[in-house]
Length: 424
Image (cartoon, rainbow, N blue to C red; front, side, top):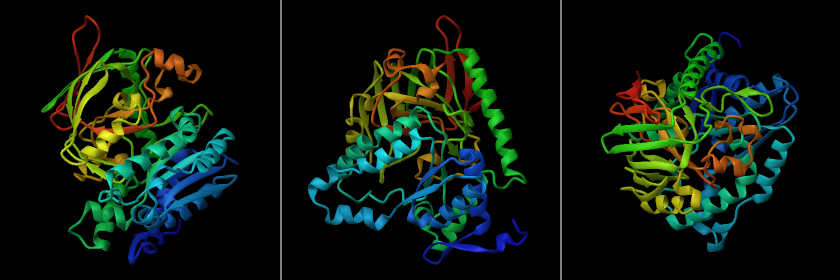
């Protein structure tokens, strides 16, 4: 990179600009750290059209790394809104199964997967909740062949963000477009560790720290986690043979990748039938274009027997009714309140960021990789060990500076893991 690269700018949306320096840095991270793209490996990339400058930068970085082929798939807010404005009622039961089938075929043939986030997180907040729910269910069902390759960690995959005006306006509604975009770009730069002299080395050190946390938890063999905070008293039983992961992990194809940039979590699989108590969200959840606020749930026998939200109640109800597994947990994750994402003090309205600011749980599908020898287990074996199956996987945040977490083993004294939101 030339010394004056930071003086160049690239249009992102309208008249707003983001430095080419930042785009190139994100592209290098996506290819070298997020994906660890291999020579001659193909890449399937999805992104909003407003992220096109970063798409181009990533394509260049991927080809310089030896990519066989880069295939971008772009979405557009106006096309999405046109469906809700003018679409026939039956259109909301359709999804591009042919497209997802093609993606699944690409993954079967060894392609990597990269998702760029940057769309307006509340694009569908004003739309009919029933239609949003129908569209989400149809899409989740059609996406299942491609999702199984991701959830099963068959391939190296990653998610990274792109600063866009649509997203920045949601986070900073009181600022002008350029000022809002500049603040979002800076937040992404810091949380992606691009503020370090050598970001790749910084990620190597960070991954080593997350690996140390995972090793400690895997050696401890807790059978339950106990979460306590105002509005929360929740015991999450852990699946038999559960395995903690975080940061860089090796996919079944042998490639070590970072599925999320940024990432601050260590996570594992709960037992689908062993979750008891009540829990309150500490951040709003942006889900499929709608905002759900002040979620509260009560669990018995692993199932959410009651769920409410002060905003987005219809969306929450429809989400939990997706299938039988949608009302049970598929993931539990521990995140320190002192994480760089949390310390920005921002609500991003985006799960990639907000889940890395707080400990969280996820409704729905579990990750096969979060089992010992998970790559050799069948669906039936995973279910027998307590793993959950669903068409959805929706994370929501429950951690805060008031959260205490204990690890429990049958007959043993509780072990303090977190106090006031941070590792002890």
